[in-house]
Amino acid sequence: MSRKTNRDHAKRQQRPMQEDDAIAAQISALLTPALAKQNKYCRQLGLRDRILTLPLITRLPVEIWFKENPKTNDTKFEEDLLKIVRTSTLLLLDRGFYHFKFWLQLIDQKIHFISRLKKGAAIKVLEVFTEGYSLRDRKIRLGSGTKTTPYITLRLVEVKSGKVWHSYLTSVLDPEILPPYVVADLSQKRWRIEDAFNTVKRLLGLSYLWVGSINGVKLQIWGTWLFYAILIDLGDAVADELSLPFDRISLEMIYRGLYHFGVANQKGEATDPVKYFAASENKDLGIVKQKRKNNTKLIVAPFPEKQRNTPEFFFSTKSLTYA
Image (cartoon, rainbow, N blue to C red; front, side, top):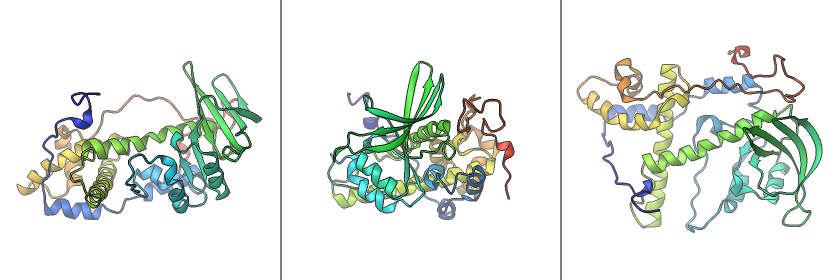
């Protein structure tokens, strides 16, 4: 790919670097995420104590690891991951962690995961939970019984979209705990990792290294991710002020809007960035994304083929109550 077509090598634009005491004070107050409402919501789902973890909800990084070798792959971080993950956690893993021994270690520590099945993988069906036109949910065995690929018992969920079957693996073997369509929905949420990298690289400039020293690189990485966490908290506060889901808030426009808030603050027209971004007269900043048409309902039935036309088939917020 040429430098002209690679967005990582695009000309750097003028970035808003407005320094202001009001911004600094507000950022300091936002360092601790407001999670009370989200925690209540997850408890009402009945999944919070069993499988859901806060990073999936908050989109904030738990740990930042650095290795000097540029050829380091995901498997080099397996030991680090095992040290920080607690029991009863559900991990969303990409194919870089497709390692049977590592999966068995997670299961031994009562840590569960969702991953994707590699093409051509040999499976042995042990039990069938659901077999339908657009859904297959089965307990399977993977591996060849060797030291490198030991046997492992998992659940294979396959969902048909159009003419394509999408395959998902999970160590949660009971559909009552983790329904098949919820497995697929959670796996798609893993894309938030890519969204986070897109934000820190393209918007916050981590595609470019300012210095060549290892210490300088580490400082840049740490500072960029710290500011990303602050940006997430600011976006969450704006979403709460507008009573909108976090997905409706544009982090890019909030970042670029900080300059405009700084100018307004110096003129004495604004003191609170959250109120400023949520104000109706500032809609032209583009903080709120256009609402997408999405009429898809999440099927939460453990055995969808047997539970059609029942109240428990679709997830509904009407049954939720908040203390």
